[in-house]
Length: 408
Image (cartoon, rainbow, N blue to C red; front, side):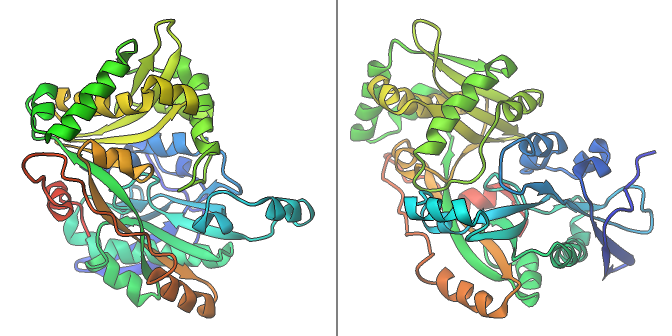
């Protein structure tokens, strides 16, 4: 029989018809994968047990798993869950991913300088609500139990920050509870989502305004020597993917956190929901790749990699973006979540920026007041307007989110 470990501390929240208790566990392995995945509904593939276990193979300073679960009178199977991780947040990279030489020199003497112990709840993938609750009537009580357990675990560690993400709004039952617990709702970088109401890739090109259609055709022509393969199993390419992704990481100027390892790519390759677009040169070498995760009607573009100079000369990255659209249309997906980074080229292929929010709580009340102020000013992401790529206006960000029925 699947059981939940008694490791961890617990808290309780009262719901109609009984009491839900939450507990932080010391590992995802404390929950049977089938019991965890039974809670995963549409819009939640990035919270599958297998994907979360794969993500734990990344390199991130101080990373350790601390998921939270909630259960009722029958403590053998959870009725709600949320992934959670402790790690050391590199504070200077919150504002700029590139750490200066002076700070690197100081850290040779003080290795922990300007790192903050952080307890993050949620998925590393945008447009994924952090809370897994199959019974929506139980959701308010489940959120209360999960967050209560997380706050206790954050105190026990102790954590400087408790961070809950990602949300598409700062309103709703979860937001009300988090605000009541002292969390500050702050905007984080937008994600780019492209709607796919097209019958074919040619239909997509035909729907574009002339300047964007011309740009697409030029990219396809310039990269004509490249071939594209959509692969289900790609474990043999894990080392190549990690190397190419590492090049992206080194030149990142927006978000820079975990390092993806070959072990991560090998683990993800085992998932039925995962696939990879591989762009190859005539000699068979990999020019670029995209890691994808299917979620019912939705598709997520998780990571990519390419060599900067060669990728620019070959048009490998821009070809990859158009091939993502082609794969989405041919796969029957309604939307592709293209992610937070390098927004401009994603807008050029027709994506719409979708605002995202996180809830943050610092253990120091003075710092918490500063976070509220900074979230309204210096740390607020810049406003990003969609491009007029198509002849007809696409759905708005609010309409795209509404179609997904992501719980608040």
